[in-house]
Length: 103
Image (cartoon, rainbow, N blue to C red):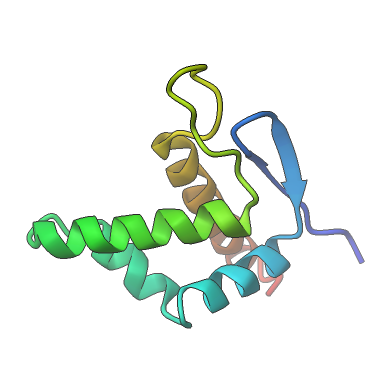
């Protein structure tokens, strides 16, 4: 069996993680509502809900992916676009696995 590896930027360097463990931990951090949180975090029709869930989702991703917090004084650490890329990359990883019939 081939190892499943997911690569992402943690705010300091490119790093690797087990995509299944990351998804499971993210699922737990989002109270089992990852897809709903992602939908709410991108719903521009409700600015308050968008802000609330974007904050919740990004905090969960920071914790689960062990990302380095952004420091504006040094310009080091994971910015929002790094968090978005990690979420998008993880979703695409699973879409690719499903497309290839590997789930």
